[in-house]
Image (cartoon, rainbow, N blue to C red; front, side):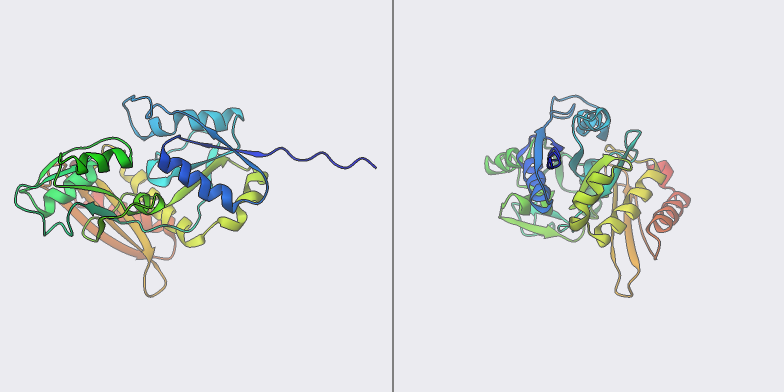
Length: 289
């Protein structure tokens, strides 16, 4: 009797930055069976402008045409609407979702007029809402490039994500509780073609229900507000002490002059995200955005 042919390895698409490759390694290690990593350059890697889709454009195209079977993203980089025919197939347990301050112990400890680097309008808005004396300046590049700018003395402090620092084993930072992170920060989203049973079976053992519920609530809020990567908005969901999901949100002007903070509790992440977005809109979030 002829043995059945071996099934081809799953092909996993990822960007080629050190952090993206590390995140892909974490997922590959948790999947049973052979997985081939395929490195793809996105519009964002090539320096093109635009919205969040530039960080996933070529990866989603490769998923759509069958070049790869699944992809790993930092969930915060995924646009609110995925390409047709694609879906978030799952997410592993979430890393710490908070932002981190590198170069100082806390925002309060920064000297008057301190130069703080960040590429995020959300971080800029919240920093200036807390300390309007800070000189917040643009800072781009991968994680180590940004840390290098800090070490060179270009900034007094910079703000990065705790998750990226931990995944790459970097130290010398302090977590910031005052800033509400963006939707999906700390979460790895596994994207695949909708209804792909083979991928669903392969990643079943690494999926985390708590991370996925939080991601649904956060992404629902952002989608309802019509927010993009150039929008100063934070959204963070986590389990409340009574078992329900707690969702906190921030919407503000980029200069920190006007802002709205709100939170809500609920059992259904989709309904919670929609309800909190509606409340923010009723308080003027649409005008701020």
